[in-house]
Structure formats: structure tokens, C-alpha cells
Image 1: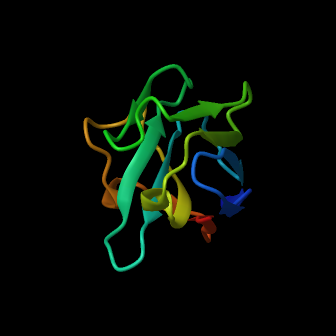
Image 2: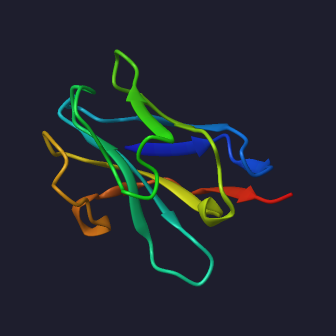
Length: 126
């Protein structure tokens, strides 16, 4: 049974940093692309970052590029999202997602990912 579990959310001041972690288990193949999505209050779920199965090719939304960094460990079971220079607009529920894809699409969509975690809340506020 596939499991996807996020952790690391919390309250942080503007300009601060936070690292989200996502642990997966149960995948029988290592060709799994993984991504972070977020749902800001009152808005639709949106893609934040994605990384291919090998952990070598990241994708970032324009709003977080140069501030966030996505990575996978060597085993491919743990996904990290290092977030820096956080802004109030980054406040959202953050979700980890996985899919049997070799690589991320040009603009990852929630419908492409079949496995999801329960989400972890990130609040950026002074």
C-alpha cells in the first residue's frame, strides 16, 4: 500500500525559512516523479515544484523560483522542499504528490498525480 506523509509545516515570519519533508513508502518502482502543490486560502490547488524520478530535473512555479528548492534523497523515498524568503502569499496548505511519471510536465497539474499526502499547513505571518 502506497503511503505519502508530509511534515514540517508551521508558523514562520516573513523573510524566514522552513523545510517541508515528504516520506513515501509502498512504491514498487523507482520511476516516480514527485511534486509539491499548495492551496492558498480561497484559491485552487496550484503547483509549486516538481522533480523527475531521478531527482535531477526540477520544475518551479514562477512565484517560488529562486526562493524554494526541491530535492529527493538517493533512495527516492523522501522529498524535501526548502523554502526561503517566505512571503505572506506563501501561506497555504502544502501537499506532497507522487506519480508514475518519468519526468514532470511543463506545468504540472493535480490530475497527473495519483498519490497524495494529507497536507501540512504553512502560515507566514508576523
